[in-house]
Length: 100
Image 1 (cartoon, helix red, strand yellow):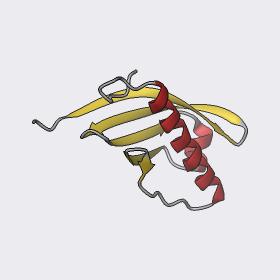
Image 2: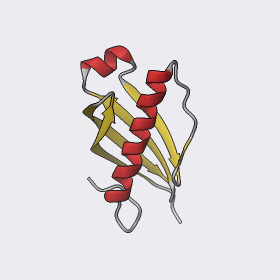
Image 3: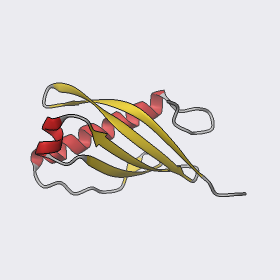
Image 4: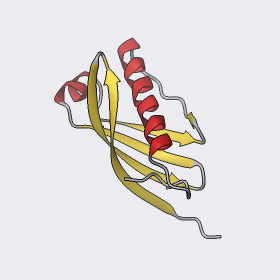
């Protein structure tokens, strides 16, 4: 069995501080249940307040730990992770690949 990776770019919507934001999510599938996900912001507010992007590792339904600098960033990370999981639940093919 060959090991291969599949890259998919999609958009996620997430609620943060009472506002619905959108961001690009670049998903790299590594194996049957491991994904590397880079969420890239296109909103100046989020880029200036936090970072331009966040990288998540998702194995099964669990994210690897990410450390935040403050409570607001912790809230943002949780919101992004919830949005990613919701997107995967509603946009995953039978083979397990995220669908655009």
